[in-house]
Image (cartoon, rainbow, N blue to C red; front, top):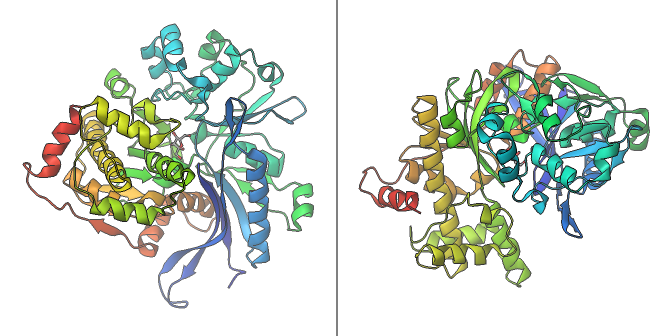
Length: 499
Ligand code: LFR
């Protein structure tokens, strides 16, 4: 029954965006257990735009697609109680004093921030920078983007009145309300989790404007309602816009079907985020040395996690091959990889050279030449090299996380679109020598929905939400294929660590 209570989630990733309606239904008529049902309403691709030397998001297109999603949900007969948006981290738009968008938001892979981690670290001191942000030094963090604009004496900074991170910017276009959602705030490197406040002293030292950041609000808060203009344009009734865990990674983490509060997870998509949940941030120097992040989650939790380059490397190879006239689907590529010889050559996925090179397959070959390994010379060999290297990297990062947490995790939960790549899940189980529990695929969407359900009073708390996830989305378990420490994966791991 489409008139049953439901909510609408927008989950925007770096390569595509989607809208899902979520409902809580009774499995077998009235008597059965409750289940979470998700219905895809709208899907669109998210293609960055290069203008001159800069790479931008097509922000207006994204807003347009969100409006389409809202209209389609109503047209399909759904009556959502609210909608909520989650996206990738760090990126933002600036508003002038009249509330108009200034310029075109930059894409986090824009090269304007190249070299700035080193420059800002030298100025501020890496220990302080880490202690006061708890964040891995990623060149694209909001701090470095603003600093790049400052160095370029961007007039946009001079007239900026408000900075809105991507989900907040899109919510602002819908509602006219300017907010900063907490989980996104913690991706900026401008938020000090120790003090629980924006790091204004640091911003001052870097010459950044101090008045542009709204005070954080928390997942579950109502941002506002669709403006009359939006309602009229879409011909829809008033609709609430709720702040979810608007950082996609944290929405995904909030949907992991774990058995206890202590679990390890990997959100697999364009990026791979490997992490674990904690009650408070971990800010000591070993965390900095291993370059982990403390990112804010739902209900004041923190997540110790690390950005790993992820399936981006594969996406870029696919794009490059397409350009040269060889169009292969992901399924075909994975099949070829499955047929290639195992554990032949590896890359270090997090080497910054793989962040945005002009020719990814060539970059991989060059890396193998430089490190004296057999050069992967076919699509199958390259894809195999990528997937095996990611899996080995996951082991390395999981072991570091365990060292930092003083914990041991018997299994790894994998969620997100990347788990549709079953070879990657199997390789991960093999590399870890531990089972991988894969699912759900749409974790970010589901985490987004759960926060809205709670806000609408459709569930009591997140635990009830997780229980729904467990009954509604079957998991696929991948067991390691070898069980001895002398196995090929174990010896390959040693080789990988020496790279
Ligand atoms: C994943 C993600 C990561 C963030 C990266 C860039 O989609 O949100 O958590 O570090 O994108 O913003």
